Length: 419
Image (cartoon, rainbow, N blue to C red; front, side, top):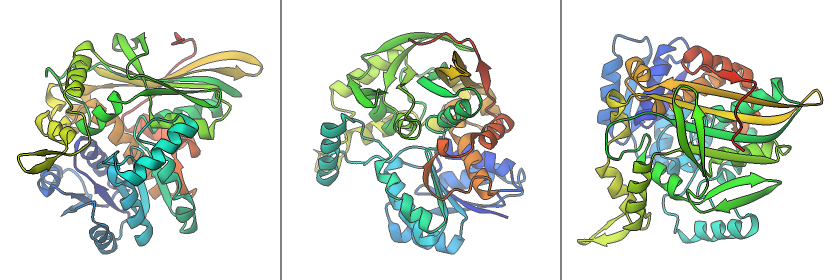
């Protein structure tokens, strides 16, 4: 019997809720908490009669520590799955420590206001010392490691697909395929078409901040930063076809570089169409991607949050999105003294995802790993306390769970290399 709180009720959270309720022998009691309780109630109603999981809903302000603690102490969850905005990661981790419960999220912490003076000072120091230019990183959450260890609790960071499954793929490759990994390319391809002139497949605020930031990769122990979208490659993705992909910074590069220092070079690529890039560049040029509040008719508004309100809700894209995603890792390394290449990836169909849980594949590929990670903690299969990323745990039960619950792996031993 396990009591779980899911914070958030967007596209990813809705997938995770459906998948948890499919496994009602593990997730026996589930509280859905969001600032928009109407969304929570709608999902609860959809699942009535389809699961034995006892579902409750709650309105919560995740910026209010006292509200979080009150909810956690009253509900007494074993784990809190933070599937809302990464801005609130730290405050929710604090509440979990206060109430002695495990924690899980799907994206690294980043501040809502990147111009906040104290954070900005620390950021500029890291840029100068390490050439680390990303606004999102694990530094702040790794600082919780000792606190979670002392309480015998797990804080599982970035347990989506990328980050998340991609890190498990690295651990799996090192355990089963390589004595030494030399290079890693992470490839994220969304071959889906939703029919809108412009929309994002996950939270617009996070998506657009991530994509418009400087790119970066890790090579020979150093961070190398490049202008946004300045490195472009073509790749022929299984199930999708030939696509343009661009080098981005992504948070799992940071944790993989820390936990697998043998890897000489780590790069992350994501596919984008020309229409998406034209729209994004236009929005950036007129200031709509800014996180700095401006005065408008006597009110303070944040341009990117205003833009988010204008764009289609990613949770609404399911019925109109067709095509597949293909996300995975390509390795070059050594096994038994011989050079070797290896590619492990997953393909996920947008319409099949929608038929199963009512969401498109981008949400599905994030929500399913979140459920699997929580399941392994609840079943005491993953037990190492502390603030950890996915590759720090045994990958086998996680990969087996993904195979079983909707995201099966495909392997290639002679892949086309990116470089």
